[in-house]
Amino acid sequence: MGVPFHPAEDSLQTEWLRLKSQISDPATGWPTLAAVLEDVRRLLERRQTLAVVYLDLAGGLRLEAQHGWQEYDETVTVAAAALRGAAGLYDIGAVMSARSDKFVLFAGGSGTETIDRQSAESRGVGLREAVALALRGGARARAVPLLIGAALVHRDPMLRAERALHRALDEAMFRSLRRRSLEEEEQARWLDSLIAGGSMRPMYQPIVDLGTLRIVGHEVFTRTPAGGPIDDAEALFALAARTGRATAFERLCRRCALREVRDAPDPIQTLFLKASPAALGDPAFAREGLARELEGTGLQSGDVVVEVEERLAALDRQAFRAALCELKRQGFRLAIDDMGAGYSSLQSIAEMEPDFLKFDMSLVRHLDRHPIKRSLLETVVRVSGSVGAPVVAEGIETPAELHAIREMGVPLGQGWYLSPETAPAEVAARP
Amino acid sequence: MAGKKILVVDDEADILHFLELVLAERGYAVLTAPGGQQALAQARTHVPDLVLLDIMMPQMDGWEVLRLLRIDPRTAAIPVAMISARTDAKDRVQGLQEGAIDYICKPFSLEELLAKVDGIFAQLDATREA
Image (cartoon, rainbow over the protein chains, first blue to last red):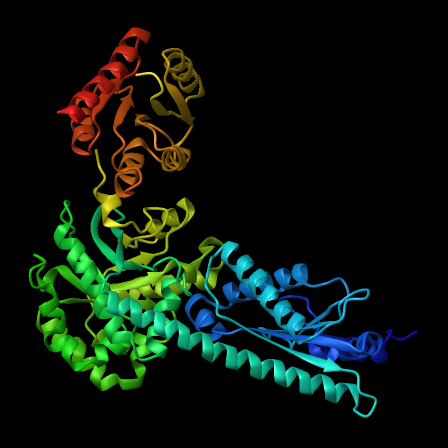
């Protein structure tokens, strides 16, 4: 007897895997739109009218670029679970395609309930609230902009069901975009009122010498005012950048932070201040803007470290470099904020002559279990040695992370485990 | 004195238990932690009025705990008294330099300990009123 050989079985297996990748999303386990169309057609026949709700975790690119794909998959999975929980028993859900962060839900109602435009609309709003709630309550409370749109599809004997469904889906997508632009206009007006109000509450997070465990400086954050349409600082700054308000908004946040420093009872040592590419792109900022803002605060330029995100400045490298040179000339120090994100070459980092390299621990979460992540951090530590700029590890959240980061010889760190961001009043409240 | 919250940190279960009994009987509310990490978690959640902190502990020693308490604004103001079997003057000096308010040597007698803790609170209240 010869060696058993099963060509038919082998190719079936391959074919199955190929097909599977087309009909289901590996992260969420949800079927793709193509896979559910037949079921939806039957549901439409039974119920005559369906609501088509489209939900897009917009801003996914930003989240994935900043926090890594693992975290993004986690976010998508949390959203999918929340959608499933909030959907009706007979609703059919799908992802637009595998690895997509766009969901669609077909709802026909139950019993004698009929679907009309209003109920489709409120269905959409309800689903969005459920997803937003789940994302806020998740392990990492990241604000993800959720776009939602709803449309109706009626059974029409003259029209092929697939075509009617696609048409309704197009309408739902269009509505989601229109809703977004309306919401963004409203948010921009709110941002304008914040800027006009002239008061943002700063928060400070200690930066700690990991050898001696002493505070060597503070990074400035901005507390997002309650009651507005945005409750996440990252999203607020992103909105400011998208709507051309970055320079004004950042100036306000800086001014408020510096004013608080002046009034603080405890001297705040070195201050780490973020500057967006928009701020750096404003020629006045580096030339005299920042120096002037320090007047009357008791801080010298040498007390301030300007944090820049190198990868975001790639668009106008010339102006960016010029601004950094000017700041350094005036005695400000420089930190590169997004080390390890994988955008900056060693050469371009060295050229910037930074004084600190900041590294976000969320990029190396579970350092012990991921050799690739570990080597990412090792590279940054090595670069730090050759550039002569110490590493600051951001986002230290557990004792294990603190331990690992100290073992690797990272000299400086900050994070929730060491101390959360606090308002100056709370810092000052010492008996 | 009654109602004041004291966090006792010691890796030796016997001592931890002894301190808990004695201080609770005196009318203090007592929290315990068998190690540095548990101590930090307890301190951040419950913000005690005093921490009695053993210096010699495996994994994270008392100095490390003290420094981590001082970094976090939520715990920075909590008075800490160090406990150690060592009678070395160096520890005493280091303790004061690192911001500990007092120093208790092991082994201690019951009366000695209570007098010390009562004394610490009396002194804290006096400075607060002044």
